[in-house]
Length: 312
Ligand code: ASP
Image (cartoon, rainbow, N blue to C red; front, side):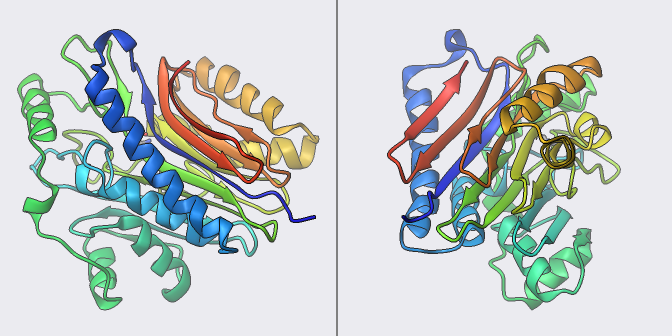
């Protein structure tokens, strides 16, 4: 019997309400998710690796302007785009990450190059950009990352002097955490995880979130699970969310569902950590928990499950 293979993706979590969503916009989000999950799944179905599949899925989400990663990245305090991304191979426990990188079209691809060609795990800022160029990665000028919606969010944040989560609405109660991620299990039983984000609108001082931090926003281990997070990065770093779930599965023998419940609906909630994550274990069990109103998410499995979801 062929081993079950599957892929799960997210496009951020937060206060995503039916009442504030138009049919047209919802369709655009759903199309973006479907396109990305198909890109990753077709690689798995052809016998490709989990690492290749998540890189393809996250690259597709990075190219899609509505998600806060790659092309759709938010503006920082000085009107530039500084992106964070990470990738981890559950088979070898190798990992690569970039943080505060500008101009890379697909930061997840740079993270993979860091994993495979740098001899390091994490590269930051100008150094990361220099490495990306030296590796021949696709680079873009600032204009490529301009979107009218993000520009307006930045202007609003500047006016109010706040650092905002993606799409934070004026009344401050409508929050959407914009980040993208993917986890996959391939035919050979290998797990992998990747996350990519533009971070927070109007962020300053080189602020970095959880996404590129291995063990916080991203983690994969063939013996346990693969995780990619979205939410208030500071709280996810302090909770070491992704590795905590892996440890609960590993050391305590909990099911993926039990481990996710404890971390997302209890531990994180207790310290005010709003958001969610996607998780996949070595048997192909899928969890997509979030403690916010909604999370853009999708999954596709070799036994015929194909879901694209937004709300609870
Ligand atoms: N976790 C990301 C960060 O803190 C933000 C997000 O998920 O929207 O940078």
